[in-house]
Length: 282
Image (cartoon, rainbow, N blue to C red; front, side):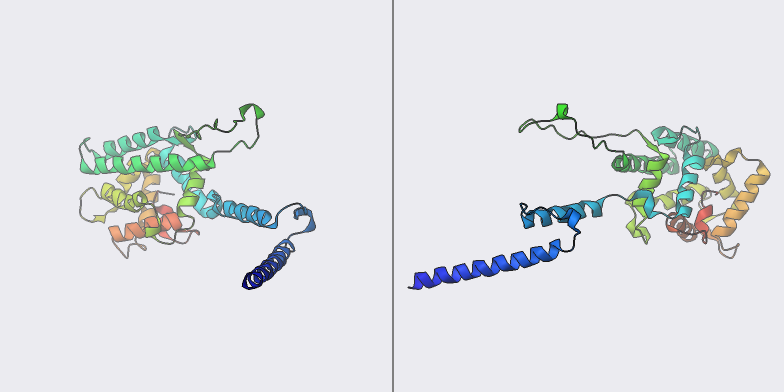
């Protein structure tokens, strides 16, 4: 008797669960237009799982340059062409950073064992490695299916690891978008990028006084930018404009604190209303 009652109760529970599943599935399916609803032969839970996975994949897809404002993109394009890609081959590689390091060392009159030169080399090495690794996600993928390359069970090959040697302008802007597009403060950035303004400040401030002078900034622009090819009058005008922007028209000294704020504004500033746009002589 007790066994029969248990079986009866179990059947009732199963009936209730099936009714609830049917109601829930019906409500989910009603949210989709008729053209995308599954046929009656599909299992509802299979359809809902498929939709959930698709939404999850879409959520993690990289947005790249879409995370940047037009003004931010212009700043990073300027950085690409007027700081790094001096040979105008339209890609950035380790060679470009090596050339930049040599330019800075020459104009700053450092030897190869200078602590500032070694630090600049180290940070720039992390810089290019980061961009090469991150740019892989923006390589166009071939979604075509080749039956000749089909592998049966047990024949699957390991996914090929793509190693890049250079970064295109489109990849460059997209990686910057993923790196700074969602950031709100310095701590949201990769560690090498958090340290970069300190490296630049120590490079510019040759005297080690803790305050960058106009003369030091002009020398740095000569070494760091292709602006070094400019006529002296134009370079002085650029230096005055940048120095004024980073010091509130001379009201403040260009200490590391002020320089770091300017650098952060260069990365995160979405509109031309801060000192960051001038940090690389734009």
